[in-house]
Length: 475
Image (tube, rainbow, N blue to C red; front, top):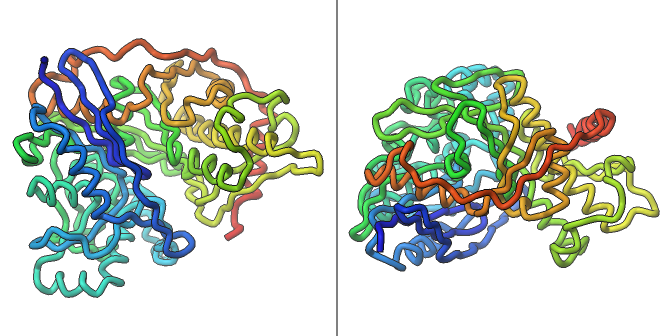
């Protein structure tokens, strides 16, 4: 049997295990769902011991892998004891909005210019820094451990690596999502750490994406990466202008920007790190996120708007937006390009004749139209290619895929595998283990489908834009 590496995708709703052979064969081996803990409105947490249990279950399936790569949720944070390696509070998830007031105070004080200039990020509860400060201010054990020099703070990947591999480190892609790393120096920024009140001596070392992250059992960990950057790599995006959209819990569009960060505050897009391969120069990306995608669909299902997913794979009626029915998926606020947590989700255009199917058709279209707003912003800043690759659970929906093609006006490529985060993580682990280079990676399988670009009427775009405007300043 040829050499293989393992990839663990520790995501927002579950943990998946994948295997990639050096000859290109890729398999999904196992998966586990974990609880979503919602202590208060706007708060989202995960049980760290449940996550660790799932990671251990994945790792325990084999001890013969040449290497392991781990993808993480991105902005999700943990505080833990350096001696016991146990978390002192649940993981606070990237979706969590408990620091809204703290962020608003920083904005009012005029500090957003600082975070944009140094981290490339706007002030928003989405990013890690304010959540880390919340842990310091509100968890008594954090204060005690800080006095004893035993407090460790970081994103979930740093907790996993410290607990399982004895390595207190994160990678540049994850660190670039915290609002604490300087996008130029790739190091923790003392001005940003001081602004948010996060002590630098509690933060992990920043390493490359494909690098040495310790050993679990007998298997070296050779890649650590944010899930969306892993998906970008797994989609085969390598050149400037290559783009992908992952329609998972949220919808995340990334495009490769090249060897320097692209900054344009007015666009609402985020310059970020795409990856760094050991000592090579980093590759940069542009990122635009929509907070609610599949989470909006799952929410609608919980309300009884549909039962089986086959019910929303096609619709007999014309598009909802053409019938003056719109849905704005701002259930957690609006991400790129608005960065507005005051916005709320809404249907607009409901009538006595509106059916459940109409509402679901509008919901799917709303997610696609929000992704279209992100890609339109990207296109004004960087040349986006004529095709865009999409993945995630919603990419399986036939109606949604066709509508996305119409909204974007580009060919939509649906890869053969829906597990692009796992594939990208495994490819990075291969590189980190010295089993491949970026130029010698085995080619991916042929796409599952290619959807021809359509055209959405400008009047429909404007109608949706008007609906988005009405969703704002509600909370």
